[in-house]
Image (cartoon, rainbow, N blue to C red; front, side, top):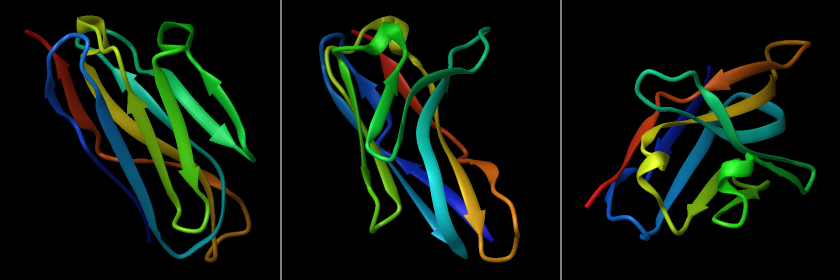
Length: 120
């Protein structure tokens, strides 16, 4: 079984910072891409940032404010969020494309999500 577990959400004032972490565990042969998505109330889930092979990709709305990083040895991915805005309020989901030992092909896994609320 492969699991993604997020941590680090919470309430923060506008302009503040939060750091999200996600750890992948289980019978993992290889992780191809790790990233973060978010879903605000009444909106579709959207990509925030992802990272693969040292290459990063960010949504335009978070460029310059958010930084994604990955520890390949520990199978973790972090999202440092600075200069937070009320419109960043959402449930943030960890996402990874993982090849497990039990399978010959990779698939997408999701965490359960962590709520980030930006409000004064």
